[in-house]
Image (cartoon, rainbow over all chains, first blue to last red; front, side, top):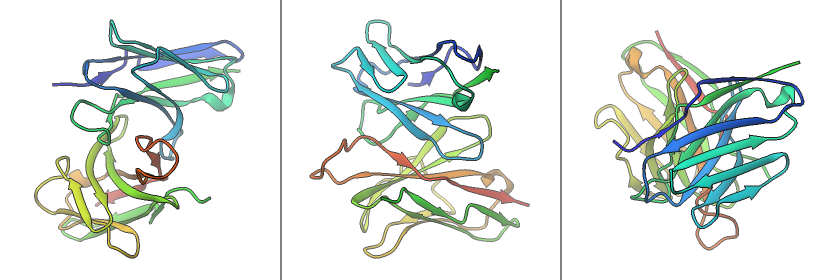
Length: 113
Length: 118
């Protein structure tokens, strides 16, 4: 079936380094993608989003890249900080609707001091 | 502007009891979504509601589960005769009405209700 998946379940980085979290999606009709951050015991927190008519979008310390050719999404975090430690999910809106978000399985980011 | 609110944050039920989970969307949002999350997994869509209407309940089990979003008050996710397999975190999200400012596709999540069935 259609799904959103991630290449790495756990990513460990040194504080101050840049982090890259990857996500593969299979639904070519998806036109909206979101990255969420989820800390332990909390709900998903919106980080950044991107529409399919763009290939790059930047926020504060974060950049999302979308490669529709290979159906790949990535989240780049600059100067990773201990507070960035969390599980990161990518989500897509699928082909049938704009509301039914399909989540990937998540990548755990661990920041080493 | 308060975010999405959910209560209770933690709920313990014995098998066979009923669980009621409440969600108040962000101010100005009239679209509500419920998701379920098992440990170490991503969120799975359950149901999408607007005021007094269920738009899509395709992700919700046909039996024992129901949801509503009345004209007044919070959205309620109700699980009857709970079983151990219902233990999970249940998240509510909301998004703006189509005619308001903001991206209507972006969903903002509440802190969740963690349901434990003994």
